[in-house]
Image (cartoon, rainbow, N blue to C red; front, side, top):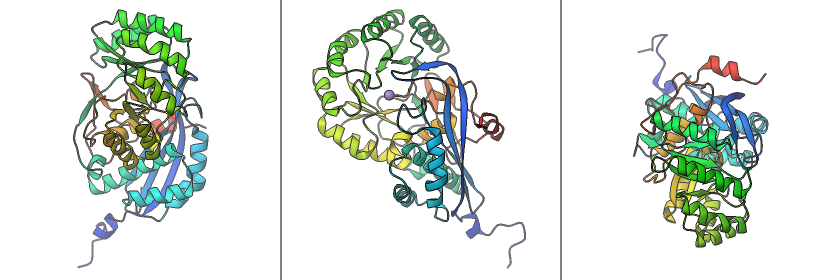
Length: 385
Ligand SMILES: O=C(O)C[C@H]1C=CC(=O)O1
Ligand SMILES: [Mn+2]
């Protein structure tokens, strides 16, 4: 019997051919200045990727940056240019559900560009999930957890403001663990700042620090015992990303565990860090690992080496944060929780219903794909002219 004019034939409904990929640069202001060792931002810049499949399903993804091409080498301008000229054309006409094969196509179209690739990969998971009516985590192996402990980052550099901010987060039962960005001040000023924070919030909060590569080996060796004495539970990327051997030497002397961040992008980086015994924990991020599937691969290498997992961020909006939660939801162990507070540091979000933060946890959104829906008015409002 012929189909009625309004019925879409099943084979077309399931047609997962990638038809179009669009990229838009957005700038969303932050609620306060956020200072890292070598950069400082008052707005977050993302590239939002929208994918359309032949069946009409659409998917979204986000490439986050921090301070232009300063946190890593990708800026939003470069991400958009490379998506439009090289990455998107490589995928048009291919099947969206062949995630490994699309990864191969992206890798042959461009070296690295991991944030750009991650945004496209996310949009493909979203579009395929929406087509099939399943959440992205189900395409990745299924659910282990549907919420995660989430910390907040203190990064104004002013301890009085930071204590006030932490008190407000504790009172609202949003966050009871704080990551302090160090390295913009001198090591002694940072240690004095850490003493003020840990004293003011003693017994009520836990602290980790992130030096974002600011220290050399002798500084790290001098400061880590004092951070241990202050009860700091984790020190993230104290040395430059290239100095994996130095991280291993510092780690061998340190009472505080070390977390690898900027030194681990690829699975090969992860293997090198594991072989060098340079970290206790690794921070997993889509912008570093080029997509959800690759994030799981990096996690698998870490797991094989007994290295703990931490859900890292680059101050994503609810789009990028939701994509991370989909990937984190299926990891066996995520012993160190996550830091997807990004949506809360923005003055506004880009989705219809932002992520839910409650009881010191961030909750996986329900629904197909990555679980959040783009607010097109917001996209237009924050799109760069
Ligand atoms: O971890 C980083 O290096 C990047 C980012 C994550 C939180 C934050 O404040 O900065
Ligand atoms: Mn970091």
